[in-house]
Length: 303
Image 1 (cartoon, rainbow, N blue to C red):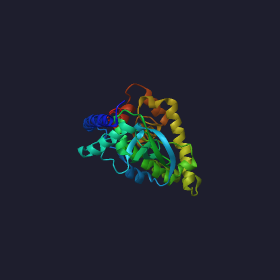
Image 2: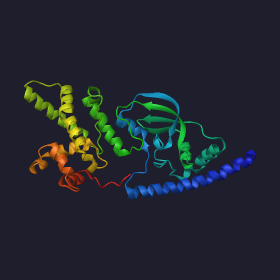
Image 3: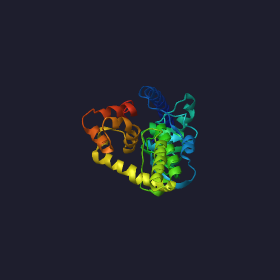
Image 4: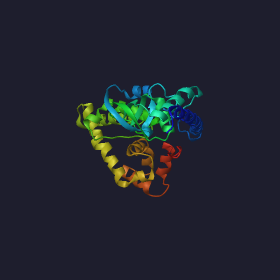
């Protein structure tokens, strides 16, 4: 059995090797981020909190959480890469000390904020970094969960944060999540929810012209959702259009047809059902080509 001095000596040497590998990996991750155009940065909790209007949090106790779902930090998001690799040589002493302690006696629980399926480190950034470098899959954490109607996926990036922030604003204005709790309108690019608000406003005007009387905004919202959006999504699903548009959603196609209805009408396409069938007509039909051009379907590297 090794004595305490020998054990500590081994741990110190191993921590030095772990640090060297972590710094090399951090450099590689940052370089790859330039070539793939995929950010190697952690998300800032402060930015996410502001954009998603996070206010109320509840303590969920100590849990074993997946390290892969920790994608942000409270205040230290610039010190580590997206994979929690250390970016600065000035962090060496503290990082190796944490690693040495972990090798000898394990780690104390960290503290995190949970937003949807993602976690942000409140306390324990170095422990997360060491744990990931050591090949651990989970870590114990005190979890405080923030209530939000939109949430974040486990691998959310800045684009998703921007989209979910717009979704939060959209729900705040329309109250669609209260009027139709089953609703789930998901876009893959920012700037789309405002277009839906314009649609609803136009739909409200049309209803008022038909009924010759004012229509309350909540009634216009539910009418738009029940009579326009939902039937359109059903057509998209029934025609299997998304099989030809990977990484996109029903909402993406719905808003695209809305934006280009004049161009489609000139081609004799007068309904969403016809548009859906046109996409499926051949491997690279007119609509699919324009869809790629408009949405940049192939401009992003696959995850």
